[in-house]
Image (cartoon, rainbow, N blue to C red; front, side, top):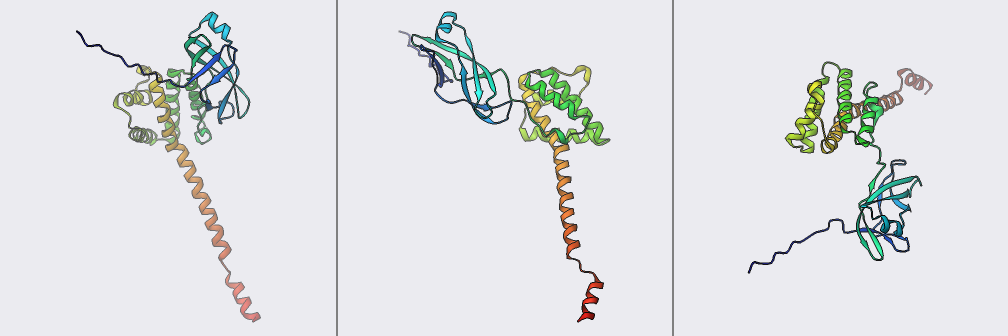
Length: 250
């Protein structure tokens, strides 16, 4: 007799949302996300959920949900997978996929004038999942930054890029793709997917921070230190003439 084999099925998405028969919406756990409007990591308050009757009638595989941000009150929209249709409720996945994602942020004011609008558009393309447009704008940002720096620009970028790869412990394959995007031949620039784009955006942020943001902040801090040091030295100096006047009056 052949042995009976059992297959263990593990459901990773244990927590769930529910639409009950009376149209009530219940959550096993509160949902908190970064708000694209105010930037706060705030709870999503459900304000528009589908009816039980409509779901059972149409039996969609995914449903749309409307929320509001608990911090600023702005509307938020998402969708969730239907896990099961039960006699008294519809079980939804707890994994809410947002239609409107939070904007990627960076200290753009520290970038050179030519590179600033390019990287701002690159961040917008990444948020919109336009991965290859994002890659092209990353290349244009790098070129603009290199031109602004001058003859040492390319060396600075290559060194900062290598440092970012080492810091992130990035594998050889994605590293070579990103190197071709930023430094390779424009006519043979490789296409990238969501996974490479997710790594590239962090590499770009780190490189730009090293080359422009960190340098500008360090220079500003040094100037401030020198200013206060000079002010303190001037205030502590007593002129020779004032000392002679004090001695005569004594």
